[in-house]
Image (tube, rainbow, N blue to C red):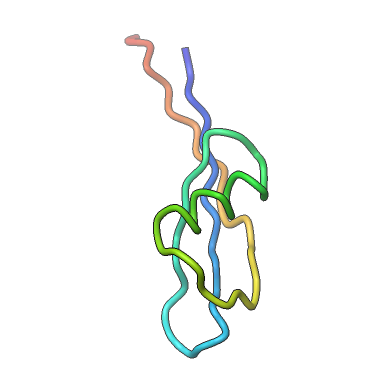
Length: 60
């Protein structure tokens, strides 16, 4: 069995490190919803999908 998740990078209008958000679906709207629930209202410059993460749980 495998689990998939996605990593998103959110950049604010201010200079600084990007925020990182993880989702269970390949869905930009879910990423932004998770972002606003965690960090609140921030002026966003960009949203970028940075990784698809696959975790395998079966033992060999």
